[in-house]
Length: 248
Length: 248
DNA sequence: CCAAAAGTGTTATAACTACACCCATGA
DNA sequence: TCATGGGTGTAGTTATAACACTTTTGG
Image 1 (spheres, protein in one colour):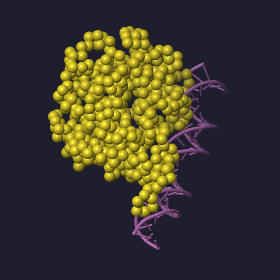
Image 2: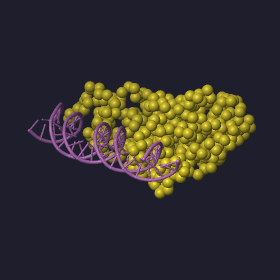
Image 3: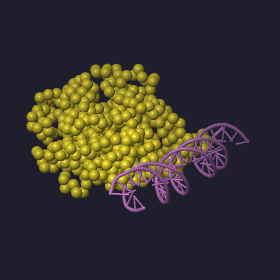
Image 4: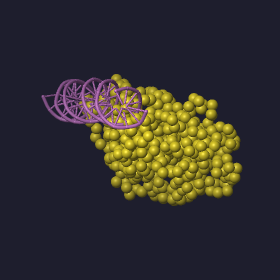
């Protein structure tokens, strides 16, 4: 059947329609660990379990707008990386009705999400596993072992795993790690972010040069204050990489 | 509003619902050029224009199943690369109703799509542009200049551009080019495929070694027949890379 | 002067490229 | 034996990694 034949005979009220939601993986590096925001569900299905923040797409709203509205309402919205991740639509993924969800992931400096989780008591920051070194196969259950009993609702474990895989895969060739740091940062902090994501230690000189040669960052001339020992120079992402212009 | 608050008050017949479709970018290398299957629309909107093959997702069907059903019904389905691409859902992308479409792309050996286009007279194989060398910015209107007047319906030019960008980006680190060739192929054919996708010539020895060292292919011991001059050895993709197991 | 972390030079290894060359085949 | 394309060796260049080293600061 073609689209048009379908539409001629299509009565929106005739059968249960699709709903379209947006689910968000809000990520930050907290205490050297990659963490995601989870929301405790206070109603069935999955009551008491945790789920990704999400919501329905409005009738006059694009998918990106919905993601921005739902994900950034709570957080101040300057300088965020927000990108569509993948779309999940198995028929039984939600027991209530047929829901197709477009997953997005967003990167924040730690302070933002810590403040968010403290302000809203149904939110938690859950550490994720990043040690599945090169293990092929479906990335599922990315939750840290301490959080393993915190079973996730719906297919949200799969979404989390997809987000971590995307972040790891994109880390080396796209300027995104910087969105997990304050606007100005020391190179050691940037290395900590990378190490938290790839799950292993990196050697300092190689990392430094790789970053400097990439041309993504520039020195500010300022230095850390209050450091116990020699203060590190602060760098920032060059402005031309601030806006997510590239389409994928 | 939370999901649950929404659902409590949600009457599926109360307002125009979302529809979910799957659109397919069927790709092959024909005469050294990357081509996509387009379908002539015989009804409004966009009558006379060309669009990607697509269809509605069934009520009991997953997205992957829908893509497989719509994309592979016409083509014999052994050894195909099929992967979700991106989801497009702007409110006005279809004038009839709110339609969110999940785009997939699929890779075929040329013969398959040539036979398909010959068998069904509303289908054409349109050459794509691959010469936008490193130009940043949104990849739009990937259609070849000769086909430029063949304006695409809806946002399908954007979908096409996204597919080409994904293919190019993935070519070097995922074993996918092989799905654009017969099961057994000569290394020169593989190089032609790569050159068609990246839009520039590659040097033979470097390419050969890269492919051999990657460990994705193995020699069959057989050789081309009917060649005018020295016959080339035939290679094949190692069986462990045949199934699209990796989730991304 | 010491401890601790910032930052840099120096070398070795691996990857990639370019170029030239040899090989096998049909006419 | 010649033309044509398949296939391979060698050397130069570049990127990457590892290691040791120097520098700067607060105490």
